[in-house]
Image (cartoon, rainbow, N blue to C red; front, top):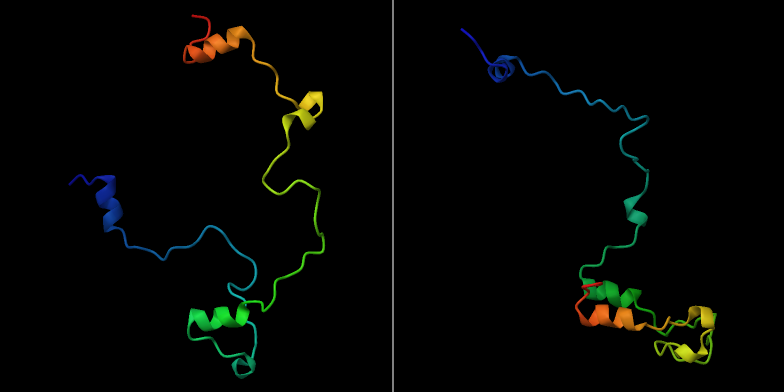
Length: 104
């Protein structure tokens, strides 16, 4: 009787799997602590949020930075020349208007 390799593998007695990677030390850290000294676990999220919410806004140590309001950006005329946008020449304008078909 000819057996395929799959059939031979199925007939073999399964052995215990041995991992190829060996880790040093204990698998899990098991800290020693007294659960009676821990604070009680909050029952609901809302009660936890009420305890965790600050009562007053937190003051920043930096303060105001600059005169321009956040999100307004900088006018391009205020930038040095090396950071300004390069002007578009006529050939590039034609390529954009043709849908990117450059040189046709």
